[in-house]
View 1 (cartoon, each protein chain N blue to C red):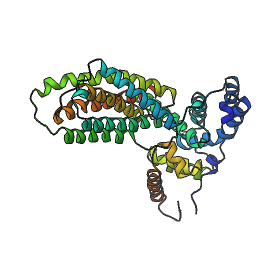
View 2 (cartoon, each protein chain N blue to C red):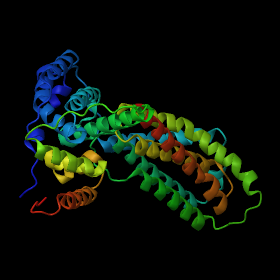
View 3 (cartoon, one colour):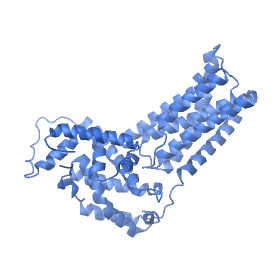
View 4 (cartoon, rainbow over the protein chains, first blue to last red):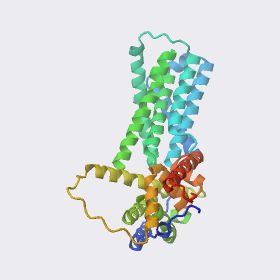
Length: 225
Length: 170
């Protein structure tokens, strides 16, 4: 016997009075809207804004790190940050559109960013000596998180243009993207080329902002519920 | 849907007429209450209206709508959970109405559905009540097709166990 849905559910119809009310409300407020651009267009726009914002924010404290990096180190590090910005921007955009095909889950994107940045730092700057580890690191973490705040606000504004149906996942992706902007600013500004310092205090920015983003998303979901 | 996005009131009415029964059944299959399903349907259409700019033709419309319907259902679930957490237990339980004569099969089906975890019930309702494909359910729930198949498989296994395997092929 095949699986059959009972007639009570299969033939159920909604309350006709309510339907009339809904139809009337729709007819009264039917206005033309412009559909959002494609995911690719929004992802590229988002990444472009974030890169520009990172450069502007890094100009304020100075581009000391950029000046000290070799061409190869700069090419590898900035390309990786750009690639990860594209991945996380794509993840954010996918969360703005209900029913959109999901390619990168936000948690995977954030973990991927943390791992790739850590491995790259270990390879490019294989110095793990930690003199003044905390004293030198705290200003970097502070700067990274401070730079992530406007980026997070910008991501929030962008998300409001869409319709988020998974607030925690969306906020996690947004937090990761904002943290990545902080990492980008630190990659341009910080002249300390030490793997332990970069992994703990630069990449740590993504951990802080992602957790914070997920908490905000969870809070919003609870408020909505 | 595209005409509705362009402000066509007639198209909006047609959309409501055509799809309301389907979404009503989706909510009914999960809530087991007609009144609640009607409330959810109204809330659903309000959200569809405010989110209509996020639909992009020629993308499939049903996964987009079901993703929103699912969110409406989750928000209602959270609201009812929060409310029940604040409710005070009564000293005397209210009288329970007599069961609907001749409706034993339906009650069984709903009881079976209620025994499934929320995520599995949602997948079964979308696949069997709403008639969506695995890919459409995957898009609506924001998961992979593999994950949907796995949830459906587990749900069917559980339903088979509950039915006692007595000639009921799910």
